[in-house]
Image (tube, rainbow, N blue to C red; front, side, top):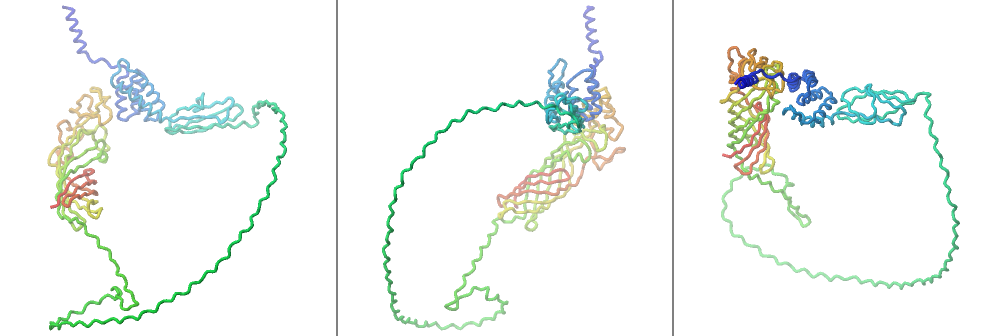
Length: 553
């Protein structure tokens, strides 16, 4: 019984005992990793170096190498990456260590491509050649050696019987440089004796054999060629001239019988015709086609006029009723104009429009649109404020917008099947539903109860404060000392037309102006009474995009 009671007390002592002290260097490693994530490498490097000197862990070695890269110490970083990449999972390694080993392999390959190299090649062999770079003797100068970019390297070279030479160079990232080394001989110095070259005895050629001359060949005598007598051409026969043909005499022309004049019926008594007013001055006779008046004068051909182009078969429609999708895209860049943090936000919605034609090319469009300004948890702080002022901002606002636009239509073809549209618009918006939420935040990698671990880090890893100094040690982030003293879970931002007592003016928009300039688009009218519109533009609420359909009334 005593043994069982003793065992029970031992078990309770283990369960209720304070946590076992962390291993050597763990505190420095956690602080250094948090500082490295926040970009504070000057603070992180000594902490991580201290942690690595006490015990080695890949999860702290890789952030140390990352900081070396940012400081320009690429060689130090490369050595650490390769050392970690060659490790295997050891007992006691956690998930962070395994992830660090995997990432070290990729980072080592990327960093090696950035490190510049230098090759010193002698222009000729020098006896007793010694090459020093920054005071360190290079055993094989003709092999590539790696150096940090941006550093000034002093290269000194000396050899027996030659003057010492030095030069300074600076390498850039990814540079592969080669230097041809030429040394000047010392004045009055003896040149090394040249080795005598053994002359080869002249080769004896065998005596040439006499070539027997062939007797000249006798050509057979040429046979005389019999000349043909010149051919006699027959005399030309005289050509007999044909006698001129006599034309027969013209026959006497027959007289043409004249037709008797037709008798016209007697005219009926005509009514007196009212005299017309004198006509305007007629065009000169040159504009009228001339008619032949004599046997020798020919009439001029009539000028053919081109046929007029038929008008478009499309009928102009003056009133259109349309509907479609209309949305906004708010890039993170717009948050950067006011502070730090933020994210890309897509605002979906739709609109109903009524357009009327002004003249022949302009449309006046009246529209009512809906927009849903929904934003997930997003870190944000005003510009110029410390990192302790970061908040988690959320929104589920919904708005209605009424506006008017003026659009200029530019037909792209004769049938007006396609048209380019350019315009601008203005209006007003009203957030009729939803709220804006703001909550103080602290670094998510901090260790509760350790105030030293609450250091600035990646704002997108910040989490909401649960209350003042909750969790313990977060008093610099979760407090009641400034304007956001009551920004804890459940806080709703008031409207900007409201100013709570002792608090700054609210930031929730209620009524806001709406402006789009410019707006460009393309219209497709496949049928006489139906058209499709695609449009984009820039507005005060972000980049506008819309796709809709219109029906002629």
